[in-house]
Length: 223
Image (cartoon, rainbow, N blue to C red):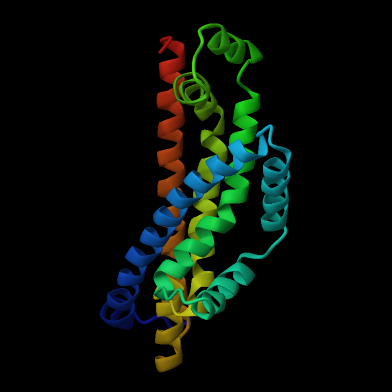
């Protein structure tokens, strides 16, 4: 294999590293949006208002069966038609945030089901409001079981960002494709992108394990 180190360090890395930062930004911003939307979807699905519960459930199932690239193109071309003009970067953040809100809602619902029923009854006996029950009793206990699932989803979000290159978001794969099309050298840029994605995934996995260990330590100490 004809690998050129000078080409790698002088051309590939200087052009791909800015895309690395874009990848990280898109991933964390879209994941934060997914957490917020997923929480609201989970609460809506548990609502006693049947139309709201049914709508949330149908939206979750619809998104779970829809490819992300379709959501990206849909928002990219639809939003300008209704007078909303966003940069490709923010369109990508919105698309990934909405798309991953569905699995987040299901992960949170699983964590919620792990909270003993007696906790709800105790909050009711103490005359807690619905908001206080969720904030002080239910959600703190539901967080610990969902950390592994949310962590895996975060890693998956990193791997989904290359799809945004189809709408001109300058993430890592988009930079690699541009280098390859200009120089006709594919090995170096694509290999560097693969290594950087591996580093991101491993770093995220270590971070998730540290969070899990911290939560487990708190549980053992009765916090």
